[in-house]
Image (cartoon, rainbow, N blue to C red):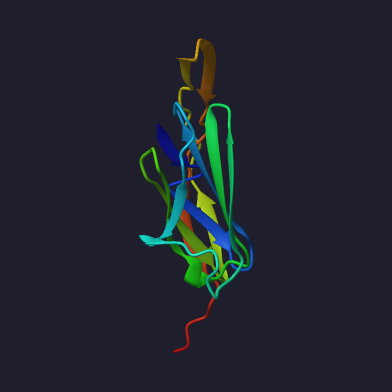
Length: 148
């Protein structure tokens, strides 16, 4: 089985928004017995004084999905989040909560060849295609003024 957090390895969200992390566990003969979420290598507590933290897990078909939702994101919520299913590897993502900073995307479109894979699972054929339109360079700038 493999676990992946969608959208990784970095996620940028604005302060006050909801952090929504999705962990997908695939290629498992049975769903994991449990899935733990970690923040900076410590198990997340859903009843902490911070509040607004919840987890939804859906077991079905070929994929088990766990969503970690953190309401009203704060800069202190920035850090590494990990999903650890009982029967698969740990998947991680680094979250950056921006407070007044803005994102600047720049770069030149670079064509890439599409990736196509075909797998057979339980006598069914599944085909997945990944298309990269272009790559960009990410820079963060702050709107705060520096006093001299």
